[in-house]
Length: 300
Image (cartoon, rainbow, N blue to C red; front, side, top):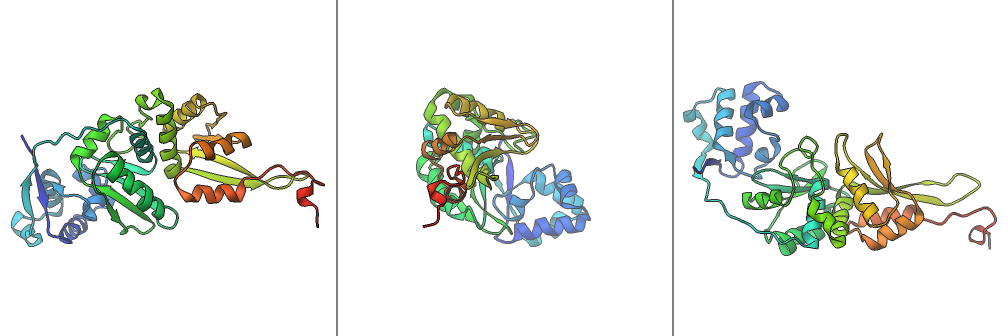
């Protein structure tokens, strides 16, 4: 049996969500829990339509009748028959898997990739958007700017999310649902390289520090750090070992990092991050060890 979804004219779904929450007297967390949803944001910002069950629960907690709710001009639409989207396992798909494991979110009806407004917008528009449309899913993504500190790309397609789920990505919260790098990615070197690129571009960083005297110069560190409870750093560690790097696990921070200069130089040349912020930080922090008296620091 195909389920019903509720559609609103533009702007009215957001108003419906905000007004039912206000009338309920609940916090946003309590509101989500009562509706049985993980995240209210995508309904609030109209990234997807609303399941009829969620709509009915919202009316109930707000004590609104169906007659009163007609002011929002909603309509029911029966879900179409399931569309099957078959994905070929390629380097581009492996990279997209890494992007989603980093700053992506997969629900049953949409797929979204988030990024910092000041640092990641160019990367989202010029790399992730064509990666989704041209190289993997063949679907157009919408670019959204309505969040305070981040922009995001969203693909509203249940067929797309089912296809990505079949490739090994879990729905919902990645930590609670034990997200891992899918096993098929470990079977080919180019897949591991591409997946690490996607992960690093979204959830990795290059940082550094000034060397302690008597040495001079600066030292770069490559880091993959995830929330507590995530198993992804363990998979990153495994992939880096298979690629013959020398990674270190920092268990207190649930972080996997590269610290040796030869590893860091090889990583930047071999993995080839697509997010330009990493190249800027690498140029800022990476440098040779300079001892006192070396020619590089002699005054002319």
